[in-house]
Image 1 (cartoon, helix red, strand yellow):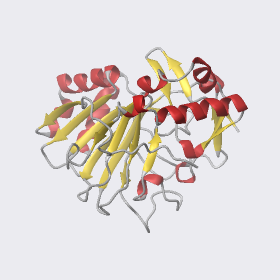
Image 2: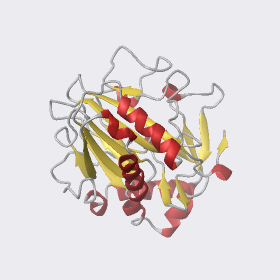
Image 3: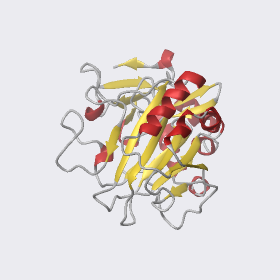
Image 4: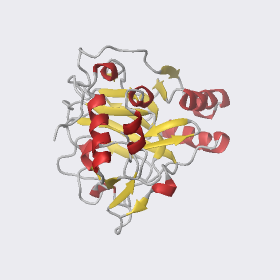
Length: 288
């Protein structure tokens, strides 16, 4: 199967404007109404925010405090657990021998490239947002995070493809490391949903199976568009220089796809949290 990692980190992809960035000097910033209000509005309007901590925070106290404030003052849902065996935070680092959940290795725990996807595409209620905190960047030139705006991507699709992507015509398999209910191995639903805030996409090629020939054609068109020069021109690549130690990037999970190229530093260490889970298309999703 051809995987859709459209050369994240490649010099052939031009850079566009990087996300708005904040420099934070102490932990108290997370409790500043002006600060967490700005973060909320930027996430709602652009879906992408970058933060830089100038203080040590190996326990991710800033992130935890920020999410509590966004929950209390701006109505964000609290973080979701990553699996039946994990809490809010998930450590992303190469783990050849030690797995975090169900004795299964998550894709993020390898050093392999991770093609274009949205997080928790297998959930009936995917998280609207997620954040990555850089505890140790890749010092060997790998692990570049690439992001692509879904609105621009969807504008390249035909009306017929958008129609079928919006139909509950896809089986989405739950990876074993993220199983929460022993009886739920997959869901049936759509890949595209239209909300009041705009279109939302979920995608991870290796776990999606179309259930209708027209749905298969729509999926093929989406995969083709991901490789289109018009889409590739919109890719933003964030290297270790852009996301050094202490960086945090917050993303709208339905409005931005992300990918990672090969990790070259076995000590690379990120921490992830996902929050504000919302039904994707609740009336069109059924457990298989």
